[in-house]
Length: 159
Picture 1 (tube, one colour):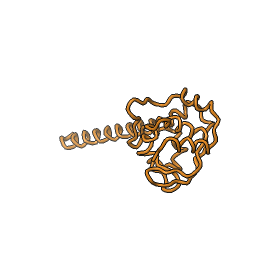
Picture 2 (tube, rainbow, N blue to C red):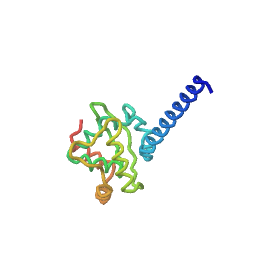
Picture 3 (cartoon, rainbow, N blue to C red):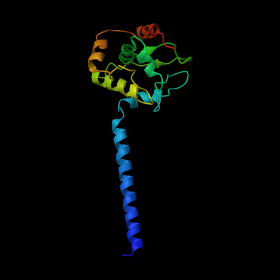
Picture 4 (cartoon, rainbow, N blue to C red):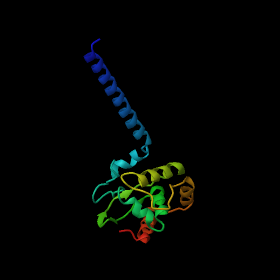
């Protein structure tokens, strides 16, 4: 085998290894994404950007909700009881309806909220920890309507 052929063989092997590592990394990143978010992305989009005027963004706005007193509870309530009515996010009006997901387990809701709280550049505010199933269970013990969740949102003073 000539040096030229050995060099080509070596280059091909390195390229195949690099491709394998790339595919393994992509597969790992996909495994880390919340499979439950696939239910949400039809409205809120894979990027978390939402749909103007109808479905608000999660990207870049979830931390503001978390920073508000009562914001964590509100986010849990939205998933458990839904939300209907006009809201404003960063000065833009939204008139959509968020369905309730009471069929999800407490752990699933906590996991979904942890996903949206840490994606698209979102971060938990300083001192806040990830959502827990116990937090969800506490909010599930309440019985609220989507209109009451809207009232809870109004009390948060979000912009």
